[in-house]
Length: 163
Image 1 (tube, rainbow, N blue to C red):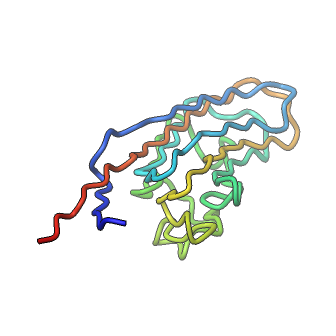
Image 2 (image 1 turned 30 degrees about the vertical axis):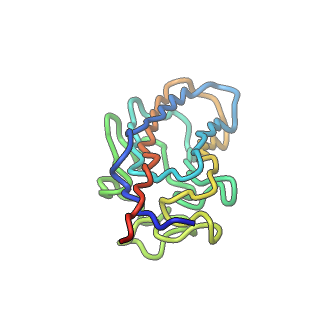
């Protein structure tokens, strides 16, 4: 197998956008974003566009190995996340310290570990699905609007020439 260099910023930046809308009947709103083999997550943005009307609304973000590996029970009700608000996971522009999932080494570190030896941190060597779920304990409102945008690349392998 030839040697190669993997540059995370080489390749095309891909985005996946998920729009969540609160309804008065669903206890769970789930989206699955496919991540192709070799993909590297660059960032995850959470846009709180309108406050969720119900109490005890939380968000989980993870993957097929751990559905809340990145973010576990992040509070989404208006007492915690007042709209309009934009949060960047990588630059930690929202306070999620109380909700970091198992992939986080510490509150100050963002995800650096992952579910298996083939998928670790932001790098999905084998591919996976990023799973985003908003949980509502007692659905009764229709006001909540949240958008999640996942930014990722699929790097291009550049061969090394040996002489």
